[in-house]
Length: 292
Picture (cartoon, rainbow, N blue to C red):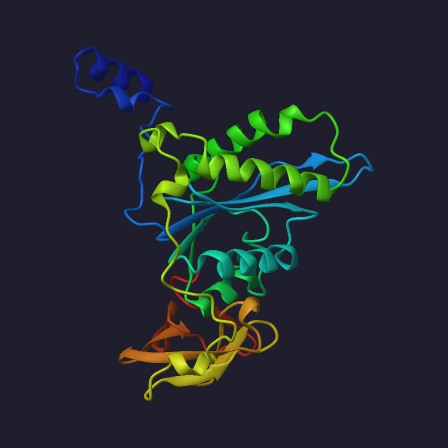
């Protein structure tokens, strides 16, 4: 049995302390500059007096632990999150990357080709802004450890100190008050007892009020195809599934070698198609490689 072998190796000092079953070591990280990475997540919902729910949305700068956004939301859908991100972008500028889990609204749903949808609509909008969305491993909340720790502090210092939450406005007032304390007055142990605001600075990339045209990212030799309603494109008599989130948008195919083309949306390489391996069966969608 594997456990017997592990026990023998451990008794002879051949296994390190981090190799015990179920206790894999945590890889800690910190980005070197503010706005290189933001971590974003929802804190578990709280119930309001009228029976509705408040879903606190939290966004944290990875380098400084500065709380970029703390918003009282009525839900966890993209229509709620997008204007709040615009608000944060206008105030702080754009980050290079945003780290999310796989929950709403950046999670994955079923696609037309029977696989998990690779990209939600919110992520496509962020791509067009030049912000890359990355995801932690499924069921590994420690990837967003700074967010998890922030949520513990928020719960202890705000959520658990109120027995009644009257409305979303009540929540937001308390969130705003505490956010100033957290960012500007409360010393942070992981920062050598400095405050997050002492390490944070605004991004050098301002939020563009008008988005660049998608075609402006493509090269002269690219073959541009419009993504159809079900998320597919047609190229050289084959149908390839790109994703419903891209429906109505142009994507570019850029040849790499004979029969192999990379697929781009704006600056982002989504994957590739290999015409030499594509079936000619009518009505069949082929997924682009590395897309899921």
